[in-house]
Structure formats: structure tokens, C-alpha cells
Image (cartoon, rainbow, N blue to C red; front, side, top):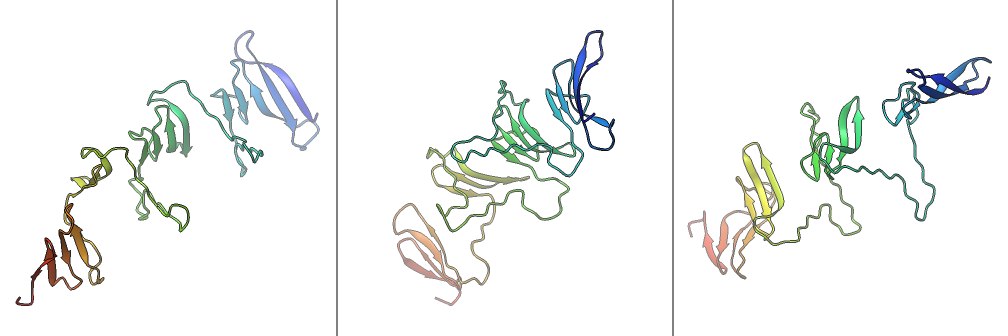
Length: 232
């Protein structure tokens, strides 16, 4: 036989299953079951005991599944929908060796390296990762808008954060909606010996602090000079 569709008993007295078998050309009678529809309506490909509505099991070097939309004008690739909006439910879950690597929850949160993200996007680095690789790396190009990262918030509220950075001791950097930046520790601008001036401008025009490259000259207020370190 080259192929066979058979009806088999599947558990209870009247519970049955349909099996689809093909011959891999080993011998004239060497039929191998490839797909099964069990008595509950679940479909198994590569397994005779499907644990989901569609269960595909592959043990080879090829892709377990491939979806290819060839319509180049307006063709869509994959549509997934769930009726739940609960944070406990998944829209999709991708795992490696049964470890969560990418999860989309029904409440819209996305987790990379975490199964239960508490933000729209949460990225958790593996605690044992000693490679020095960043948890998130953004690389921009010299084209388009010329922005590697663009953070926007439709408010100028001082209590809302455009960017909030913290460590185990608390806030390190907070940039609020009104454009103000708060640092939780010392601030270093420019590398030592880089020759760069540092200027801090106030909200009033013409008022600022400036340190020159040698760090011997400080200007402040409305360009009044104060010189340090040379006896003046």
C-alpha cells in the first residue's frame, strides 16, 4: 500500500478516530501514521495523542510549520484571535526547551524572557547570562527619521515619565513630560580629556553655567565670569 485512511476505535465503546498513513518507500507494507483526528476532534500531525485542537510534533531538521503568503500586494500572513482579554491567558507563546522566550498575553502585554509581563513590553535578561550582552539593543541607520529611539507622550505633565530608569536602590534617571530631568546620583558628561565643554542652560534666556575644556573657567548667570584655579 502507498497510503491509507482508516477508522479506528479510540477509547470508549463508540469513540473512534480517523488515521491518515503513507508509505515512506521502505517496503510494500510499511505504512506510517502521519495524521490523526481523534474522537474529540483534535488533530495530531506526527503524534497519535494530540493535546490541542491542532498538535504538530516534528523530530527532524526541517521547520515544524511554515506559512507562506505569496500575494505581494495585500496578502496577510497569520491571524490569531482569542476571546479573552485576561492577563493570565495567552494569545501566543514561544518557548525553547519549555522555557518562555516570547509571550503575547491576552491583555496586550508582551514579554521577552518572562511569561507574565506587567508592562506593554517587558524584557527580562536571564540571571545566569554572563556574556555581557545587553537585554535590549537598538541600532539606528542614517536613513528615514534618523532616530534610533523616539519616545513620545501626549502630555507635558510633570508627574508623567517619558523615561524612567532605576536600579535596586531606586531612581537613577527620570525624564518627565515637562522636559525636566532628575538624576539620582553624580552626573558625568563627556569623557576625561575629551576637550568638550559642558553647558547647563536655565529656562531663562541668557542664563547658564559653563565649564570649559580645561575646567579652569566657569561662566554663570548672564555671561559674568568666575575663574578658578589660576589666582584670579
